[in-house]
Structures are given as structure tokens and as C-alpha cells.
Length: 283
Length: 279
Image 1 (cartoon, chains in turn red, cyan):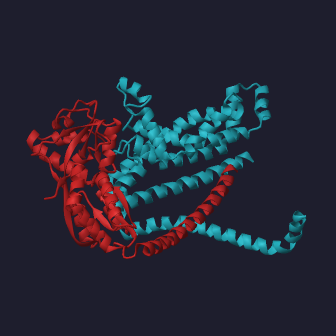
Image 2 (tube, chains in turn brown, cyan):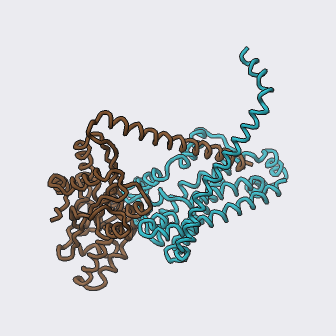
Image 3 (tube, chains in turn blue, red):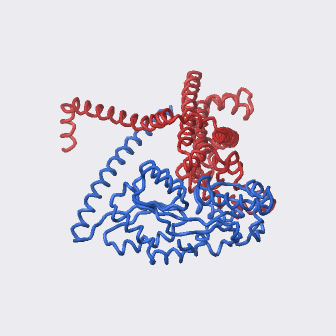
């Protein structure tokens, strides 16, 4: 039987796979050992190692830049970052992901992490952000002001439920409901055609041009997307200020390094970088 | 010289070597079985201990399951209707560029689904190569259930067409010709003789294709997006729930695991039946 043959072959592949994964695992652990040995040799007083930062996807560019700064300041240290929605990162940390620092786009996720005893010390709010509406440059749904996202037929994309960018958006719509008359929130939500994994994924829907509009952060209007995307501001009285807390995590491999990262992002230098990427200072 | 030496050595060592080899092979099989069953066991244990059975009955789960059933059924209808004659041509007819077409059919099986999703977006998306003409007629593919079906057909068709072609190639030509001599038309010979003889292969291919369509994730989330009841199939629902409610994600995974078991058992039963008929 062809299936039998395929099955046998699949079995062989699986065995190879297990063997390869096993070997790779050994390789990684021995490689890690070699690495730390090497850096302690060359660095003298300096410590090597890896700092793992879990950060909200809206921080991708700013933290990317700060990561390089951090590596320059701490020779031998490698900064590894994972950018996803704060809610996904929280789930991963709860499941024991090896993170040293957590930077969330909302206080809710951080509060849960604190409550679960995952955080070292007290979280610090280090930056703020504002939501905006983003539309493709050619603006197929002709959205001129915030209220237009409720027009029938607008293809609106939102982040997944529980993702801060979407939670803020819902809060804003709740406020707008009171101002524009009830039904506005319902109209807007009935325009939603897709829920994306994080805020950057929903902005990308607008960049590609398949969505007419999305809720993003002011900081998501990066140089990379400026020639493809237009920003429609949300009236300040309806907008929500997003607050970003950062904290070192209890299971951090090197608590000193983790604290150094928190110090960097809260320092004047870190704040400058964040402002450059369209964030607003915390204080 | 060297060769002879080897031959001379082998009879003495073969008994021990064989036993060692079969021992290793058995250990490898145990490793494989353990490697597959442990994650399954973990899913079930979590569901029991966290009492997340309830999430299986949630409206999200129901919508996702219904959508998956609907889209994969449509996918299979398209794949079997178009794929059967296509596979027959691939198996029986010689034509220029056949090798190329043959290789082309295999591409989606090798291509990572996320790459397939990007490719589909650039083809059928609003500004895609083909999509922009649809758009001119007011037809938008992205974010619709049709996009889910397109993604599923793209990644799954290969499995059916390939198996069916192998099945058709295995049907002896003289049997078909005998039917033609006996006065059957070409179409009748195909439906009454060729298809029944190739049936086990067709069923096997269809089940593989269906399983692939059911598991489709990467191409769907990139090309079709994720919205409850419209484009959020079970794999996408699992991913969405993972953002906020891991219990529900686990429950959905167990649900689809049960689904997979039923499919595999049915498949085994059907192919056994089919081969018995063949004998």
C-alpha cells in the first residue's frame, strides 16, 4: 500500500528528527557553556551572558535601537528580544518562558504578572503612547476624521481581544459612544473584518492595503510605513493614554543585567530614543 | 580484495549485528511513540486538571468547528472534482512540459504555508495581481470565507492529486481498453472501471488532503485574516484563544485531537474495506 510505504518513510524521518533535535539540544547546551567560559576569559571584570527582553510589539523599533546601545555599554552581553502582544508575552511568562525583563503596553498585563509573583521589585511606568487611526495612503474608504471609521462598509482591522491596543480601542469607542450617540461603537465593531495577533500585525494589514483602517499607536507610524500609511488623529478628549510599565522578572538569569535594562529605558538617554520613535515621556 | 574481506566477515558478525540493529530500531520506535504520545497526554491531563472541558462548548469553539467543517467540505468538493480528472491526465497523458507541471503540483507541499499565504495575498489581495481586477467588479477576497477555501485548496490539493495520479497509474491499461472494446464510452470506462480500481488511492489522497486543509494555519491567517465565524477556523481559534485564555486554547486542541482520531480510524477502516474489495 502506498500509505504503508509513506508511513514507514515518515517514521524514518521522525526518528531522524528526534535524533537531530537531541543533538542540537546537546550542541546548544555545550555551546552555551563554551560561550560563558570564553567571555569570562576575555572580559576580566566584565560579565558576559544573554539578556532576554519580552516587549510589546509596539516597542519593536525603539527597543531594537536600545538593544544595540545596551550591547555597546556591556561588552560580551547579547540582548535577545521577543516582540509580541503583551497578552501573549504574559501567557508565555506564566508558562515559564525564560524572560529576564517584561515591558508591557498596558498596566493590566503587568498587574497580573505582579499578582502571580513573577516580577522582581516594583514595575515602573517608563513611557506613554497614544492611539491613532491608520489608513492606507490612497484611503480607499475615504476616512477623513475619526468618526468615519463607523461608516458602513469600512474594512476595519483590530488586534485580538485582550491585546492592549484592542482594549484601548474598545475603551475609546465606549467614550465615543457617549459623544456621538449610541450605536457608534456597534457600527464600528460591525466593520471589523479581522482580528490580528498584535498591533503591528494589524498595522501591516493597512500597509499592504487590504484593510481600510486600523487602530494603532502613534509610535507605529515608523519611517518604514510612512510612504504607505496616513494617520487620522483621535480627538484628545476621546483618546486614552496608554501607559507602558517595565519590570525585571523574578526568574531572571542575571538580575543585575535585568535591572540595568530597566535603568537604561528609564534613563534620559532611553527616553530620548523612545521619543525619537514617537513615544511620549512617562512623566 | 576489500570487498571479499567484508563478505567473509559478515556471516560471523551478522547474528549479533542484526540483534543490535533490531534492538535499536525497536528503541527508536518507542522513542517515536513516546515523542508523539507525551504532548497528547499533556493536553488531556491539562484539560482534566484545569477543568477546561466547558470551553469546548463555548460559542467561539462551535463557530470555529462549524467554519472548519464548512470550509474543508467545500475545499474537498473542489479538490476532488478538479483534481480527479487532472490526476488522470497527469498519470496517463504525455504532453510537452509534463515534468514541469508534475513538479509544480508538488510545490505547495514543500512551500511553508506562511509563504503560501503571502503569495496568495499578493495574488488575490485587494492590490494583488488578480485581486485588483476582482476589486474593480466590487468583489473582495481578503477577509472572506472564500479566502479560507482558496488557502485550503492551495495547500491541500497536492495531497489528493499526487495520490490519485499514483492510483490511476497503477490501473492496467489493458483493463481500461477491454472496457472500451466491450462498448463502453471513454467516460463510462473511466467512472466504472478506472475510478473503482484506483479507489483506495483516491480515498487515501482525499483523507490526507482533508487533514491538511483542517490543519491549515499559516496561509489562512496571512491571507484570510482571523474573524470569528467568517475566517477563524479551529487552528486560528486556538491561536486567538492563546492570547487571552489558555484553557480555551487547550480545550480546542483536545477537541481537534479527537476529531483527528476519528478521521484516522475512519481512514484505516475505509482503506481496509477498499483493499478487500480489490482482492
